Length: 445
Ligand code: GLU
Image (cartoon, rainbow, N blue to C red):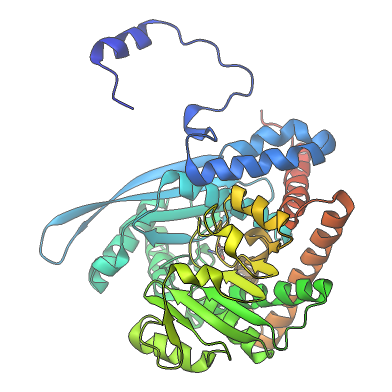
């Protein structure tokens, strides 16, 4: 779209804008305009017929409560100044403070952060933790920064979003390319600005700074927990099941390890560096050690290298996309051979691909429940920080499994009852919880 000429702009300002039809979305929120946010809006539309009298509040879910765009200027090591674009979006806070990660990635956009913040609202309500949904990000490839530059960028970003975050307002956490160290810098920056140490302002911190045992592995553990439950419903044994994993970081790596420990064969693993395959099953601990040393699966001697695209043809029973969104699309959904797809990543399947998988009778465990283990243990971390009383790992893992299983059982039953996908069932449960709270609270003023 070309920019309006000054004359057109003047006319537009001079004439009163035509009245918006009731409930029309502002242009920047419309489904056909914006990738991931548009996908989220379609998901909400699918669920609206199941919301009963609460459907009158559904517009609440179609716009973020608050979206902040910040400029993040820092001194680079060479003395020059660089500007990065940062975001923090609070989609909904009806059920509690905003909650969700912060990602550093060169492709981060406002649309993406808005969609991710909305999926956090759904996810948090689905596992029934007392949070709304939020997400943040910086448009940057962090691999191009030195450690000092990364720290300065993280601190300046934290300071800029400091006006809307806080232990009772909005609690960031790790996401793509952010980790415990970044959370430590965020916690420190917020605390320095406040004048007192506020451990509860972020989760996913190092254990020595008020972090929780089990948090690092929690998302992968949740993927494994719901995957095992769903396999049971399908009559599929985990012992001997063939698993293909895309993304071998905090989510995919842990999930692969747990599936392998339970007797599954992890036949194919893909990450940013390449794809490795071994029909008899890859040695997952050896592959994890290789990745720790070489920063990627490429070059692993215990498997054959495959082309990126061939990954989607892998003969397997379970496929786990655990990298970025938009991976399973019209072009590859017809080729997937798995009986079950477990979405470790947020938004890895496009709606068209979702329909193809469902027509092909492939069960999709949607992100909004499959990867909710991370935020569930984030909740445990936040509770422990507030009470300054810390639990052992066994207790944390047992509570995590209980929360995930209870949530998944309810989703499974709802899907059966309404004959809908697990994604729509998760949205039915979550949107009902959010909008019920919305209704109870009432509209201010
Ligand atoms: N970034 C993770 C997610 O997408 C975790 C969020 C959190 O712990 O707040 O669920």
